[in-house]
Image 1 (cartoon, rainbow, N blue to C red):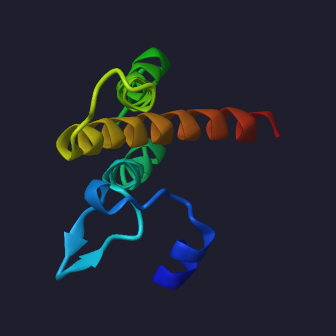
Image 2 (cartoon, rainbow, N blue to C red; image 1 turned 90 degrees about the horizontal axis):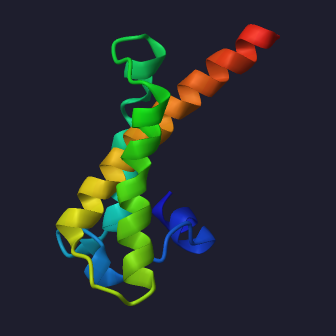
Length: 109
């Protein structure tokens, strides 16, 4: 499974921007790990255990955009803690939006 992820390059996998466990690098960077952790909230949204307004879900994604774009454009250097936090927030935002949009689409069918 890990070889498949590395072969398809779903992430840049830069070693200093990735977690390591027992001297082995995770197949995704810290930011992508955070996004995947945020996706774990999807069942909570689906079953109605968490209800967050759409505007707030969109606002949860903005820190990731600001962090990644400001780093990419060379304005500043991010760190792994910030990458993880913004990734988790964005993953939660994406999950909530996905559930809302799927429920809207299914409601129309």
